[in-house]
Length: 70
Image 1 (tube, rainbow, N blue to C red):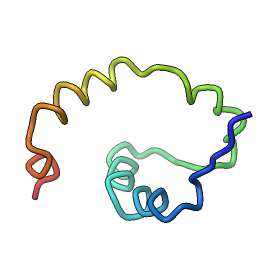
Image 2 (cartoon, helix red, strand yellow; image 1 turned 90 degrees about the vertical axis):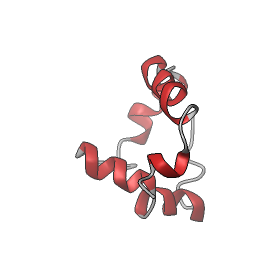
Image 3 (cartoon, rainbow, N blue to C red; image 1 turned 180 degrees about the vertical axis):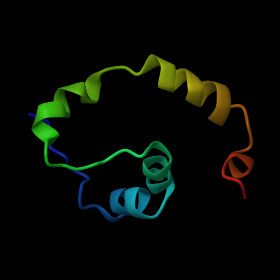
Image 4 (cartoon, rainbow, N blue to C red; image 1 turned 135 degrees about the horizontal axis):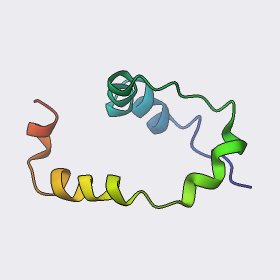
């Protein structure tokens, strides 16, 4: 079974509590929790082709600082 190994790591917490992860949560209105981690862990290895293409089209072709609004 997959374990959330970075759950308490400073870089992980910073991303979701203060960084872009927090912005994603606020923008999407998502509710995130480790409460049902085991239920959804199998999706960890599923491929998100649409999301991957967005990253390729946007983040890999544009200036990162401009994308961040800085």
